Length: 430
Image 1 (cartoon, rainbow, N blue to C red):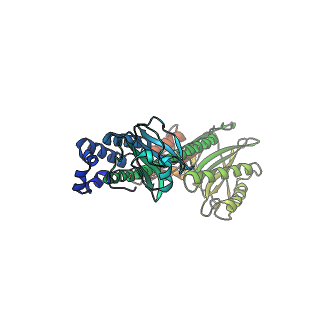
Image 2 (cartoon, rainbow, N blue to C red):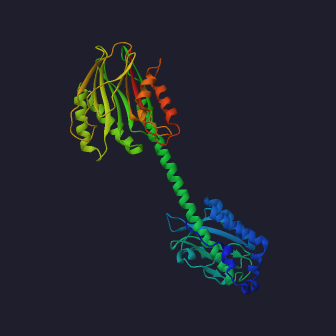
Image 3 (cartoon, helix red, strand yellow):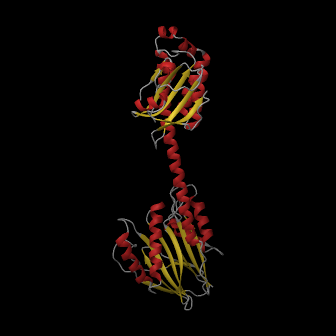
């Protein structure tokens, strides 16, 4: 952020012979006035609250030099008007009042010209517009940043020709400091509003994503499903889906889009929508993945891809047919744990490939786990992965479930900055 010399630093550079000849500067040199101007300078350099900043500035100036009125007008970025933001001692205008630039008063004139105007006797100045009856002189100073007028500082006094040349110098120095502070405060406010907007949009996106997962799980005779979805941020590239295909058949999807955050979430949503449109057209998971891959290759950005497990469960025969697009091997749990040795095609979106199918019967008491690498690759503070051994150990415990798995992964990685989306689907054969 830019800085300006404080008014006190500027004042200290005025020759002592000038100090002694000016009652105004002598007043500033008094302990009380010096403290007030130093406080104003400190406030200007420290405050990022624009309205509080301007209120304190006008009050400190008025208290220090006994002005009739002090005001700060800021240019409306959306129009050719000046808007009153800080004022002390005015009975005519309130905050929010507007003046046309170049049309009304000394404020409008200075805003148009960018040049300080000093009306030594307001009764003969062609630009002065009467405000307070006690006003006899008015000093109006442009607030400039990067060569543009962003506002005007206006100081009225009850004496004719109240401000000497050195006095104008001090107030112009203060005005320069105020201009920088206003610019910094506006930048801070804009950044805060942008952050709040991004936060709101992220929360909305998360709510939309969550709505995709909280729908009712299909009732499948002889089977139960457990699911867990734990995004690393507001939104995720991981997702799962359970699709009722009719005739006691259920499509089971677990996928992980490359990348994180909003880009991954957008690609996830489009991939999910395309898969759902394809799933009921062909009973084969392998052929469905081939069609999906062809469509994603045409539309996906370069370098983006999706790993996916897509399975079709036939509840009547208890047979599940699995096809993998570069995804992690499923874990079979039947008194012991073993990873299915299935062939896999390329991740979706990377190139033309086939997707071999793996068939498996799930007798009662058998469980099958699909999971994303946000589980096995979760790091602790020592950069040690959660790994497949801990995954197996978890499901060797009685009554193990996916919610417990996610909680175990969270404990493992709670002090790590390396986090990823973690999602799991557990199929229980009863």
